Length: 432
Image (cartoon, rainbow, N blue to C red):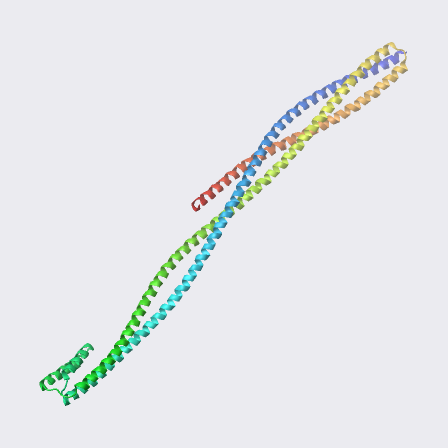
């Protein structure tokens, strides 16, 4: 074997040793970096697990709160139904009172009509009574005048029974207010007394007096009948006025009751409108809260996907670490074989066989370099995934902030909801 061949073999061996040392150093650094990144990933996974556990607890609390809010909304719906039923009852009562009021107005109109008819009848009866009284007075005056002249003639001619007839006539004339005629009869009686002798016409005078008394009784009966009709009409008018007063009082009480029911109906309508508005606001807030909870649930699912990705990355890292350990063992094996070949090279004289073995070692070294290149590429991919996980961790922190904001909004919503419930309880307590 020549010296130049030994020099070439020595140079190749030194190059191989240098390359092997460089590969060992590079793989060692890569192993350390992978271990440190693995530790960091484990710490981040632990933090993510703790945060996920806290988020799970918060989500459970949010779900419980949503269930409680739904129950409270159902209670509010029940109260709204009861208030709607009370409102319907008030409306029916208002309609019945309105119907009674219309009936009272109709009866009042009928009473007014009857009262006007009674007043007309009373006025006509008064006119008839006045007409009868005037006719009676006129007939009395005519009869008294005729009787007076007949009596004068009778006394003048016969002088019989004039004292009693004159007394009767004087009483009637005094009752009817004819004082002048009564004085004339008094003078006639004095003349009659002065004459001192009465003859002849007593029977005729008595017959005339009987006829006059019978007519007067008939006229008195007519007057009494008219007075009884007038008293009946007055009693009817008094009863109609009393009925009108009682119906007026009843109408006023019904109007007051209608006004009270109207005010209660207006208050109930306002309360129903307020309850509807509060219920609509609460429903809108609850829908917004449910939408936020769904968004948070989607973020939770996204976090689960990130965790699954991190777990896959961890498994990939474990596999790469195993590959790295296997390559390290192969590298050590190659170094041992290289040393053994170097020893054989020193002891052997077969240069061609040594060169072939060196070629095999070179090809194995190239394969090792390819594997190292693949490991470098996978390391870069792991670094890229680590950056992605870091960004997702930032997203998770933003999700945590959004969860805190959502929790504060939920607390505010629950406080407003409790205030609405307290107002509803305060509004329903007096009616109950």
